[in-house]
Length: 99
Image 1 (tube, one colour):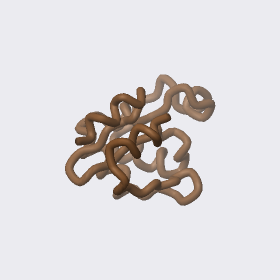
Image 2: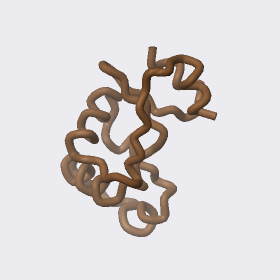
Image 3: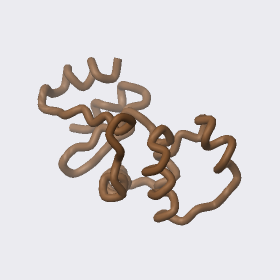
């Protein structure tokens, strides 16, 4: 549904499957900067790994970056990254805000 919404806005995008090809610390920092949100806002706190290993613990930004790189399933998706800003596409209607 989100992909169809994105296609209705633009045809110029690339799908980055970071669960198949790892995400880099630089990419994570770019996403956080463009979202203008704390890094904890891009973490899926319903994931088993989070609930079993991270829930209730505090981490610094760089520690979160490392954790997400090592466990990319923790990264919320979809995240649409534009030239100057990014959005989390949940719900899919949010995708319209990338303009």
